[in-house]
Length: 116
Length: 116
Image (cartoon, rainbow over all chains, first blue to last red; front, side):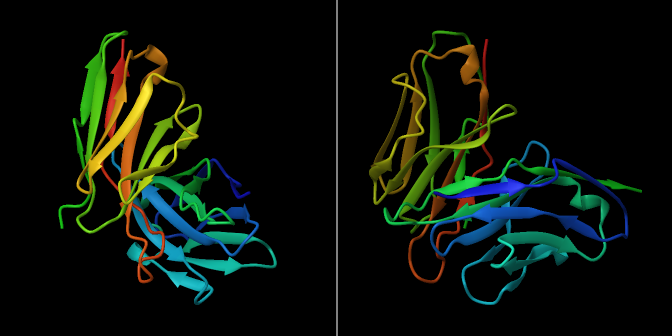
């Protein structure tokens, strides 16, 4: 079985300061991990993904995430927040397990606010 | 590529009416997923297809919901009869299960359904 826990439902930062969105996962097998972003009234856009290659993954818009197996974490970071980063962020795990299912399990989401 | 296309973008209907949501996946993708997003339950997988065949429909809430994929470029999600608790945003996503793209899913803009 797989699950994802996003540790913060809301994060507020000032423009120009670093962003940290925390995510922990559990998985029986070697998972693939993703971060998706959803702007208000929009669909979900892929930010980045980890698929057992490099543990530090770079995504779009200056975001990156580090896969830490020992901590079962996949936190999302950005050095300097921009107003346009305000959105909901979802940490996602895909774990085919022994059934080969390819469905995603979504975290509950973290709403990022960026203050001017 | 136009991305995943969903229609309609918004639907308002009365309780008891039939609702049909439509999805056109990205050309060449062989997996298609239907998700539902609500404030209370977040993002939930309803059903997914691989090569037009339903693989896992365990997330379909009840018999009022049905989904079809008659060909590789079209899928429908039908609710009959609809109820107010079906009000949600319904997302369609598609992916290619070849080695280069792993399980990355690309989401459509969603259909916002309101059942009165």
